[in-house]
Length: 369
Image (cartoon, rainbow, N blue to C red; front, side, top):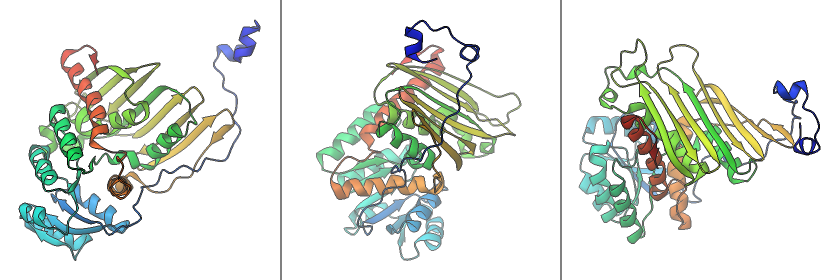
C-alpha cells in the first residue's frame, strides 16, 4: 500500500498484512567508481616495512597494479628476501630501518608491522618527512592517533590507514551508491557474516582477547563509519565462546549501533563450520543496496530504487584489490594534495565505534560513542 492510499483511508489488503513484495523491474546498473583508485604517476617510490604474512597480499597487489616498491625492510631478512624475490626482485632488501628513513629515494612507507612496534615507527617516519600507510587497526589509543594525525598535518604529510575492506568490490560499490545519493538518507546498515575462524588455534592470533570485534570487526566498523559519518550515538555489543570451539578467544560477537534516524547491526558468527555466508544491507529513504555470497571474495550486489532492481557485474576481489585501493588512494591524495578517503583522521571515527563496542562487551550495557 502506498502512502497516498493510506492517507485516503484505503483498507490494507491481505498482501499488505503478509508483507508480500511486488516484483521489481530489471534496470541498468549505474556505473560507479568502485575499482581501486590509481595515481596518474605510478612511479612514486614505496618502501614496505614488515615481511609478515599479510605483506604478501600488499606486494602482490602493488605488483599487479604497476606500483613502484623500491625497498623491503624486515627484522627477518630471509623472509624479506623471499618477499622481494616473489614480487619485486629489484627492490633493496634490508633489516636496517634507519637506512630506509635516510633514503631520499623513498617517499612513502607501508608499515605492516604489529601494533606494539608500529606506533613508534609511524612517529619516526613522519619526522623523517615521509608519507605513511599504516596497517589496521591504526592505533589502540585514540590520543596517540590524534597526536599522529596532528604531526602529519603540521608537516604537510599524508597519513592513511590500510582499511582495505573499503575497496572490496561489493562494499566499494555500495559505498559509492550511498555517496551518489541513490539510496537516500540511511536508516539501516546490517552485516551478517558466518564463517569458520577456528583456524587461529595455535597461531599468534589466539593471544588477542577481542579478536573478532577488534582485529576482524574493525573492517565493518570502518565501513559503517564511511556511510553514516558521525551520526552514531551508542553501541551495545556482546561476545561469547561458541559451543565446541577450541580457539581461546570468543568467536561469536555482535553489535547494535544506534545512529541519528537509524540503526545498524553487525553479527559475526566465527565458528560456522558449514554453510558459510556473508551479507550486507544498506537501507535508505530512496532505496536499498544489498550484497551476499559464500565468502568475502564472492559477492553478488543488488541495488533497489524506485526505478527497479539493478544487478551490477563487478570485477575484482577483496584480496588483493582492497590492498591496491588503500595504497592507490594514498598515492592519489599525495598527487592531488587532498585528504585520502582512508585518512587516519577519518579512521579515528571508525576506531571510536569499535572501542565503544569493546567497552560495551566489558560493561554489559550500551556504550556512548
